[in-house]
Each structure stands twice: as C-alpha cells, then as structure tokens.
Image (tube, rainbow, N blue to C red):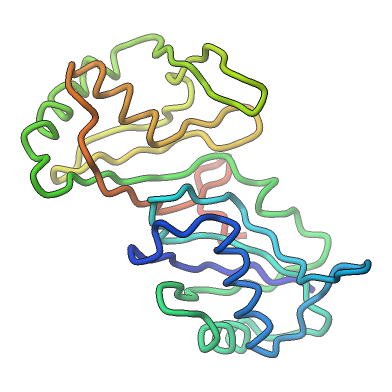
Length: 221
C-alpha cells in the first residue's frame, strides 16, 4: 500500500527550500519507525514524493506527499506517528491509504489556490493593486518573460489565471499548476503591479490547496 498525507508548512519555515523540506520529512519518517520503503542501489533512501514543490517564501496550508509502505498501516496510526516525529513548523493534518497502483498525486495535479495579504506598511500600494484588478482581468493577454533552465522566452500569463478575486482585503487566486501551464504567484503580483503602475508591494503568500482537474482537493481521492 501507499499513504498520501497532508501537512502544513508554517510561516516560521517559509524560507526553507524544497530540498531542505525533503530532508526534514525523510528524517521525521525515519524517527517515526513507520515501515517506509527504500530505493534500491548503493545509497538507499526513503521513497517519498511531493505533489508540487513549494517556492521559498511561501507557506503551505495543505501540502501533499506520498510514500509507499512495506506493511499496512492505518491512516490514524500513520498520522499519529509521523506527527510526533515532525519538527516544529511542520504539522501532519491528514492521511489517506491508497492502493499501490493509484494514480500519483503529482500526475493528478492541475491547479493551486493562493492567498496574498499585504505586509505592514504596504497598505497604500496594496489598495492600488486591488483597484487595478478589474482592468487586469479584462486583459486578453498578459505577456511576460518566462525564465527557464534553457533561457528566457516570451509567454502569456492570462491562460494560467483560472480565478482571481478580492476578499476581505486579500487577493485569492487559483493558478494553473500542471505539465501544460504553470502560473507562478510572484509573476501574478508582478504583472498586476505593472497594470496598477506601482512597484510590487510586499505580501505574505499562502498556498492553501492543491487541486485536480475538477478543482477538488488532491487529498479527496
């Protein structure tokens, strides 16, 4: 069997990169004593996959990971043992048992939800950002330069913005996150600030959910 589990990465760990997060999670799984599976080869390591890396500076409220197990474990037992082994700032929230041949969360991922809140002292520019939202959403194209490992190329952000609205002074966004299109939250703020004609205001960004192509949370398998 394999276990899909949901965890939260708190604000105190927002500057921890994905590789450090992987190491912390693997160490916790070792400490937990759970019957995890290891890779074959000269340097075996715990087989652990994340649905999507979380960019540095962003907190994650419902991050998704999966791990194959050598022996059956109940979701409650898995959650309790992992929760006790995790370091401060990482909180296990939910576990869902799956068959070995169940589609991977990474393969089912289609989009992610984010919220953006202004940091203290940024309220003035933030209001200008919110005021520019109707004009921004009315644009048919939102060109920008995408930076990749192979260089830079022009791209259009607009197809990747699946939903964007203001709620209680915050921005709430659903952005594409799949093999065909990825809309990054920092680029969204940059493009919106360009439309507003202001510098990009400092914001606290939270990824609140990872979604499949029906916009259901990935953990609802």
